[in-house]
Image (cartoon, rainbow, N blue to C red; front, top):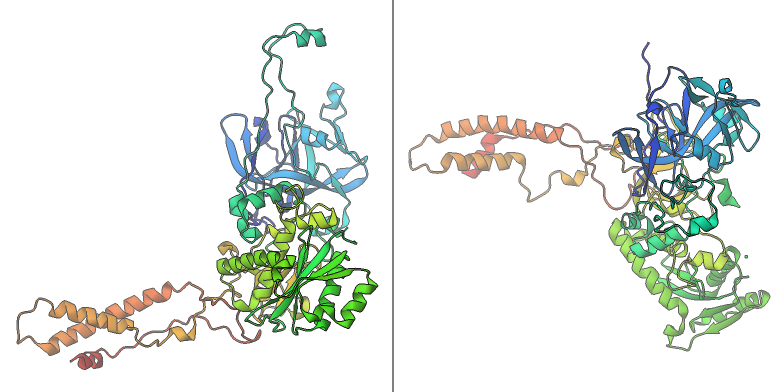
Length: 617
């Protein structure tokens, strides 16, 4: 019977990162028995997840570690993630959760770090009972699990979890989800080798030439490579954003997409603002998708710079009032409203609403639009929107989606011009820490696959995945990791949380990304066909350097015809074998979801060489 070791949950999320720490394990950690055992290594300063544990997700911060084993062997650049396994305790089976473990898929068995367990308030008694030890681990929740001794080393008996076990068993955390620092409890090493043990504080103070304390510095993160996830904001802004925000939410990696019934980040599901709101109307020369709007209202907080935009079809007071009510409903009521001198802001319905919520209206002087604070913020938003559309190559009708994406980035990124220069507009307005996890996985107009609803799935005629373009974060639909997507099939905007990137060539869905070619690429005028090109080259070879006037034209033409047909067949067959590209325009496909796909067909060119040579005469 063949044994298959590959599992489909071992999928790379392609998250760029450069932050690396160093892990060390014992040389005995690489020696395992033919049992479901994982070593409890007292000589390891970090855990390692092998193939006997299930990968749940990678760290959103993208940290990597270098693993050194006693000797000269070293593994570098291993990603950190969260793993799980099934362990039997005094209360029955549990699903053990291990955070901040290095993913080493080429290793059969996992390794647990004793100090990492102890840092999470677990009592690790790895001394065998034969020597008077407890030979068990007791968690802070009261669970006790025995240790097995093999060749004098303690092991934890654990098994790979099934889907049912993940759903049904109690989840128990053995390590902290916070960033693991192995140097947390290091001594300062201020004393050299000594012989007297009963010294006091005065003796220590009198020691001459004390040693310098030791410390370690983590590898610097490459913030330049992360700019594409933040609308190409400056690297200094991205660096400050990482420093003063959290990245606690995770997008579970999977090659098999499935519908989610529970939020993967429940902690993220857990309003009068002390500032004025400035507003202005913006215009576009292209109708927006999903509505055809060509204008929008932008709102900006004067202290926090918290920005929102709402598209409208009409430039009247009624549509503005609806937009302003949405702003108040979502962000809270401001202390006042600042606008230009347009009459729609002075409408009767607007005045009634402003009285009801007890805020004032201030309008700038006619022809002095620069007095409106929203004008300045709009220039920043417009500049970055143009940059995102230029870098992504998106069509103009997604201008409002690009605008909304830029506003989301500006709201969540640190602004050095507000507060003390270390807070984002959203943090200034809400007094809550900003989490940028939704921005770390995709960039604007990135091709992605999303899961089709079960009612629309047809096996085996259609794939369960469909292709689209990532256009932003859905703030008011689904969990915090739900995204806006433009479907390649319909061109409509949809919101999905079960998505994955389509940039990974090793995980392509060839039913959604077939080898297609545009019909307009065939029979293009003023372009030489392969036959014409070959015939011209052959005539040049035959007639070049020929000084005879009485050469046999029919024999030469016949010889050219034979050579031409042979070379034409070989060249066109080679070109057919190399047709692996996928021709795409900037806009999504507008085909029917049930319509046939136009694949590249293996056509054979048939050329009448004699007639072509005659035409040359």
